[in-house]
Length: 167
Image (tube, rainbow, N blue to C red; front, side):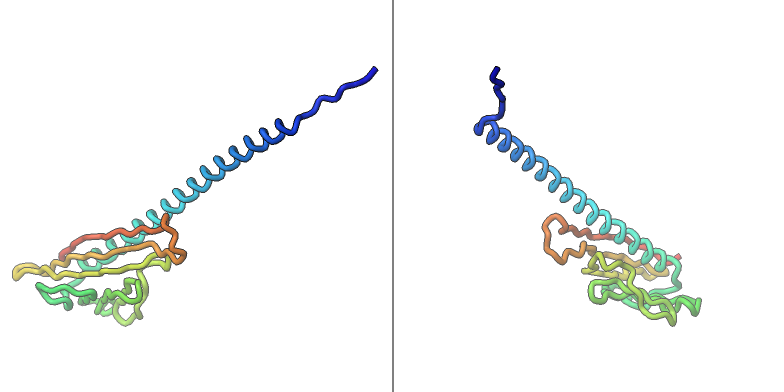
């Protein structure tokens, strides 16, 4: 008795390989899209978290200060100089330097308020103090995610606004 072996024809093998290739392409495209969305979310989260932290820190220091040395009332600057009666905090200076917002309190050297993951730009401190107020400062700055590779999904920036008055 002769046994017949049943196998795949060349056409069937090619058809299955084509279906497998389409499946792999669809899955890899989906996976790449998911990775892009995840990275964009990380960039947005980093920018927003750091921007909120910096704004909170600056506004807190303004509220706790005794007076505003620079900019003078009615003017704007990229540097904010606050005075305190506390020697350890006097003077407190915020200054933009090489993409970082720097803070110096009293005799301490400048330190960066932001991480190396973001770039700070367009910093404007506007002294809007009136004759009858201790001091009112409007703060504005831009935070951008550092994207050395130039990948479009990591391009994200946000402008932050806030104001505080001396108590």
